Image 1: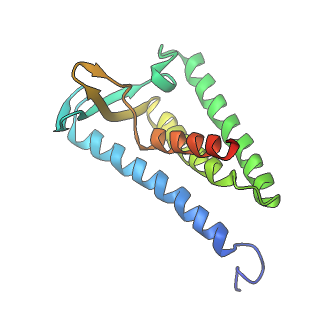
Image 2 (image 1 turned 135 degrees about the horizontal axis):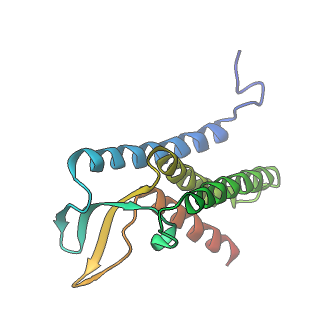
Length: 160
């Protein structure tokens, strides 16, 4: 059975699925390498302004609501699933209406899904990219976060 002839899986949809899985796979592999090679709080200087550090983020972006209780954990799981479902619906509508926002949704969904996997598997998200200038360190993040920010930037670009 040829899936392309049945309109089940177009080459365009296949391309987006591949991007989705590449983002998740890169994030997953990078986090596994961090877990395997660094203990928590250990860091390696890569180049000036960039460290790789093993951190556990129990909260949201910028470690907001990072207290370690079951309600905060459930809140983030529920919110993450809700965002993914809403964006999947918005992606469907965007593709149906030939709107270009589906690419930004793809990046946001991929990053959100990857962080959700992390939170379910570990109870926290593994962050490891530490950018800094002199003594000022930006919030530590991961590849899934880069994907989410990329999606947000693309979405804003389509609005302008």
